[in-house]
Amino acid sequence: MNGINLGPKARRIVRFAARLINPLVLAIAGRRWMPILGVLHHQGRQSGRMYATPLGMRPLGNTFVMPRTFGKNAAWYLNVKAAGWCVVTYKGHDYKLIDPEVVDYATAAPAFPRYELLQFRLVGINEYLRMTQAPDQSKADKEQSPMSQASIASKTSAPRNLGVALIVIAFAQLMVVLDTTIVNVALPSIQRALRFSSTDLEWVVNAYSLAFGGLLLLGGRAGDLFGRRRMFVGGVLFFAAGSFAGGLATSSTWLIIARVVQGAGAAIVAPTALSLIADTFKEGAARNRALGIYAGAAGSGGAIGLILGGLITNYVSWRWVMFVNVPIALLLAVAAPRVLAASAGRSGRLDLPGAISVTGGMTLLVYGLSRAATHDWNDAITVAALGFGASLLVLFLIIELRSKQPLMPLSLFSNRNRSGAYALRMVAGAMTLAVLFFLTQIVQNVLGYSPLKAGFAFLPLGVGVVIAATVTSRIIGRIGPRVPIALGAIVVAGGLLWLSRIGDHATYVSDIFGPLAILSIGLGLIFLPTTLIAVSGAAQHERGLASAVLNVSQQLGGSIGLAVLGTVAANVTKSNLVNVRPTHAAISHAETIGFATAFEIGTLIALAGFAIALLFIRARSQKTAAEALPEAA
Image (cartoon, rainbow, N blue to C red; front, side, top):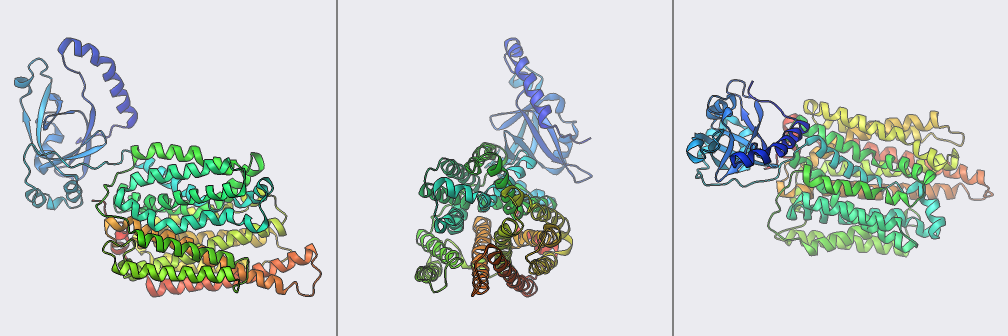
């Protein structure tokens, strides 16, 4: 047996025993009985598999000290001699070791002869990654890195528990996505408590979305420059501060500002979370599974937010819609440094002119489109916002073309697959936000559901997205991303077409449950493949930016879709109220017709997504799809 895997519980027991025994041994022999436990990773001589052997060890100069019982005849030592290299994981860091030699410990420490000095040459972790990817190149790699025995490895923090790391990343993504909708069912209570006007109430939602969408590119770039794990923790804490302030709000202005702070924190967390998957999980099945869970969290967050918001509003208070984020965010901030891989920052600077122009332009554009959903397109403020927003975005493109260190290299859009993925994510975002917005009103105004019951009505949407994303992660390596994306767009179109048949006498089982289940499956088929493709071929230092553009696409698509479909619904509703007595029944009937018409237009948008998948997505095999998140170096 070449090695064993010693679990965390067993390691804690060994360390605890060492703490009890060490004082006695130290008093008798003058040396500790057990050094700190480490893990030695080595490659089998015949099987070629990687094994992990837990060893008591500690550094001593340029060597590691370990028990003599693991000497020259140990299986792991023979493996290391045959391969010429191994890796030691010690205190959360990986050290690449080559050319092991046993040194007689008795001559150096005769008072404690139970240990040996195992002499290695140490090289960088980057070489370890290359050699584990291509073991047959180990000799060439070793020859290319002649380092003396005194050389110490450059080190990067490695994840200690991939399962916990994935939980941290997924919960962070879920937290920032669900806050887009968690306040929806609490809006009536918020309006009464803080005396919002009907016009200003929409800013409880818009303030978060605008800050989130407007600062995403800056957040992704900051993660690339200053370290993704560091920015991830900072973004989570910023989000917690905004949530705490929002729960304490005593005025409408206070709450809106708090929502802006939340959105700014989310703009940092979202792009760095996706990039951390690339830094933490190796390319292949493990990364695909992690991305499947990530995509499920991202896709189901909106529906979960509605359910959670309904529960909290009904049984506690609307303030806990904000406060609930605080303990979760603090736990994530504490866990992240312990379980997530740390990527070193890179030299460079933030493209401030580009950041200001793109953030300002996107904010004005999203604001104008959001306002257009409740005002006429000829409204002066709407026109001005769209005009100035478009002008700033044109200015941004000019700045990026001339900048030596652009915030968003336009080369990101030179890849046909990636551009198609961004466009498809806009379609998915538009359909998700529009369906949640319209159905929230239908189930409450037409079906008469309470906020709690309305929240649970969306449960099929969240469950379906998670299931579809998980299944997609298992098959995408064989069929590539194009098939599930195209199929997903057709399925979404079918669900929207079904919803367009809704009428005054609709029931949940016959008219809403089925379409929601179909929509969720279609969206789940789209989320993971577009996530894979979006950062395909992007350099490591641009990974955060590529994922930020993906999130921007979804946010912008949601705003555009809701603005356009909201305007369609509003205009159809108004036309059906002309020369009609505005009774409750008449208004409900007109709104239902407006929503149905909006779903018909949504069907056409989903079919446009199908066309985009056929025309732009060309990656069909695992070879192209799996390169979506390159190996962290």
